[in-house]
Image 1 (cartoon, rainbow, N blue to C red):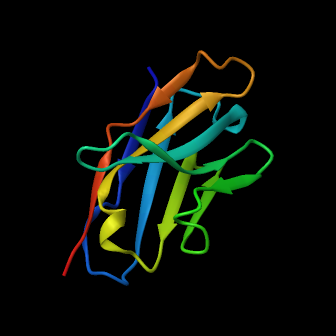
Image 2: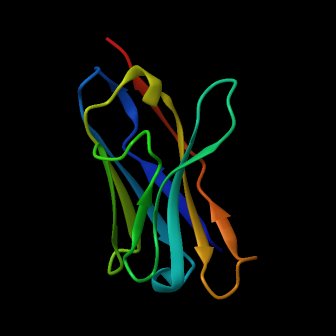
Length: 118
């Protein structure tokens, strides 16, 4: 059974930092592109950051220079380090893993809430 379990969300003040984690099980993590998405109330889900199996990364313009995605293949875990947080970063953050060679093998975590507020 495939599981993606996010953790690390919570309430943080503007300008603060938080690190999200997403632990995967039931998949060969090294062949999966992993991405973080977020969805704010009343808005569509949007891509925040991604990491390919080769370690290439990409970011939404709104988070470049503030967020960093990284992966630890030995732990089957992907992280999202979020710095200089703004109220507009408030959202539910979701982890996604997609098999590079079989795109129909696409999995989501349950989401973790990040609220940026003073």
